[in-house]
Length: 194
Image (cartoon, rainbow, N blue to C red):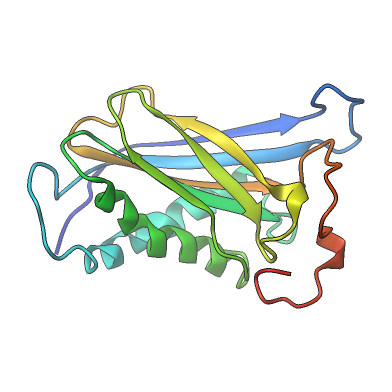
């Protein structure tokens, strides 16, 4: 069973009051939580990776809980999410894909069974690499007002033998959304898309 010792955990939260237009009464809140962990597959090719997803489930839940707290603790207010990974240079991009199940399902579970696919980005990156983690509405992928990203950087990572696993959530759509499409208030099918 692989082990993913945590070197570092960080949470960053931000409030967006305007984006060049008038200030809004209620700011949009975004947050990201990440953990820099040892990559047990660094420096070698491992044919079988999927069982390691199980080992990452507690990390997914822990980061999710920290995000919910950073956004005020009201799970009903959180309406967008995303995930990502930066794999250190001794690893491969497939090691970042280990995060799909433990990261995505942790957020869905804690948010009460969110329906939409969790947007994702991953890459192999050197020390100090940043990642734009995509965000999308938790229940309908076609809600344009919630298409966004939050940039994450572990300034001292990933080290070559590490992976930085990231989860992100937000409360509210873009502050000056005016691109039309399906509004969050008009979600009807509850199929994860519309």
